[in-house]
Length: 321
Image 1: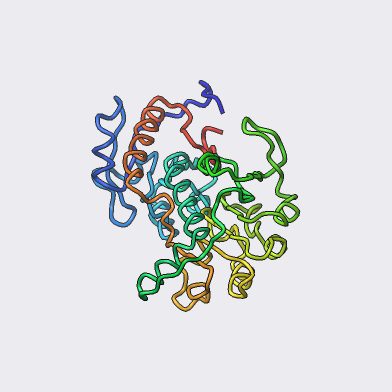
Image 2: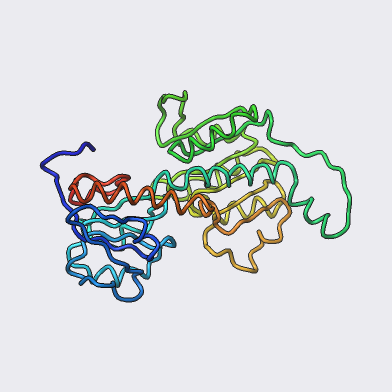
């Protein structure tokens, strides 16, 4: 949405969850005030009625709803995550919501490639053998020349596709609807089961919403060939956890998962002991690249907010709609 004078909405007071983020925003634009509020204690030096915008802590949580209810006229809720599922439930319809799209793209794409390569080259098995004193030479499928089905063509999807390119994979991309973009053909989600039938690796990086919940369901999973690898770096609930668990525990499919539904994955969950499963605890965007990138995004955002311009990365327009 383009900036327009009719939607000039100045933000005068903003809160951030840590002193480090507050320091990173200095000097603030003229007329803007910022304070520290972690949404657990009280905001430092500002009254609830003064607050126009809130930057959430990095770990989004539903327990913030009560704190946000104390802000009578909140204009903007700013996430530090790419995903924004659950955030509309924390605030009223009149509050805009902005994501941190772009901040985590490189790190999450890096995680996707790490999981793919670890599974395709048997790194999990090698680590077990290392600890047990075994030396085994095994031929693994690798990544070169594999058929990869990438579900999600947003910013992180593009980063994953770029990192897959040097491996000479046969890449098929899936978005919400069929279309052509700058990188070629994008298939629609209505083709998923048909496309899955020939995929050796399925990578999931689509946002979680009502349309994508259990998008990768029992039908799509059943269509994958025996031995195919399912990689999820999106949100756990995009994949039907029960259906995936059955396929992996049976030994028919493999999985490399940075996210799951529920999280944390219960200690007794069968996937924890299943051969062919690699599980990481939602590490996707959590690298040393995060802090400088989120600070850079928030500095840009503050400048726009002080000028009354539409915020970056709006996923719900609120007063800018």
